[in-house]
Image 1: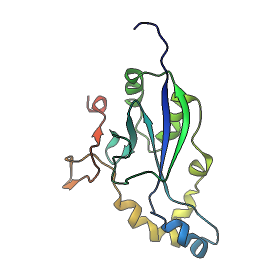
Image 2: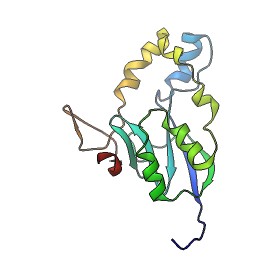
Image 3: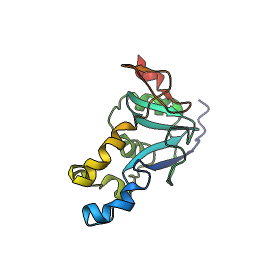
Length: 164
């Protein structure tokens, strides 16, 4: 280490897993507007990090089967280098990890419209109609044999530190 302080930009990628279905059908089904069913990931150190079917994975930004994100939020900068970040990721394994990672890197939370999405929405008839679609989207690295299922994402990798 040369002691020089380097900063790295941190972005939040936001995907609507309903592909617009939530926005179109929620007024009829719920009586209120629901903008999307959100999946989020953190982009830092030149890679996109997300919680997938088998744990934390990474890929080039925008390289999952979800394609390009619906929105990108600039979360600011971090001084956390890639080694410290990788060590930190090894301690996680929660599907809510985007908010925790954002706070760890920048001290900022992800937007409340994502974290506040009521879980009861998925227990409504509309949510039940969306559940097969949501459940069918498993974001996993390609080539991983998961009980006969091969992930469909592009160029994604499980975090090597998690395989220890």
